[in-house]
Length: 258
Image 1: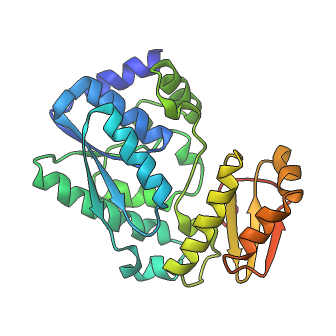
Image 2 (image 1 turned 90 degrees about the vertical axis):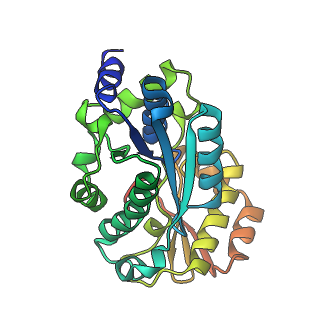
């Protein structure tokens, strides 16, 4: 694959590289190719905070471990960022600065001065305030720079035999809440547990958007009937503290809160 070779060539220009790793298909491809090209001159750092579900953290660590790359986990206090806590429309900008600041600090301690993220060429077409923060901090984006789209990345990941090649996209737990509402660890736990129940049914990209005591569920349209007919699932979700459980008839779509 031409773009995969272009990525390898691009990465070979770095003496050392730290990958800001999330466990998603984008950063997973980047981490694996960086390790292939740079060996021990590549590391991965995972930012762990309340915005990251425990399952996503566990998956990311397992994937990094399988690769063989040296990886590190840094704790991030996202609620200390006022714009994050009150879900400002530019929340992602301030949160990214906070997370990347901790990753940069850890990388620098280890002698790595260049940090790369998993931004791809499709990300420039959607609302991504965090990308601006990354640019301001000097983060490099090899997938973006080599013109790799999400489809290119999935194809390359499949070619390399990476298990993330068809992994459903995920996002920060803060995206489950309307802007300008206070975010809390308690509410994060509610949506995280509810989404885990949906994931256990084998339904990809399940989202539980929280509107007060209402859980608005987004899943692909071809999986609607599975949810509607599962009375136990509905009751289990209500038991997390929701009064009403609703199904969004538009189905799953990324960034619906935007």
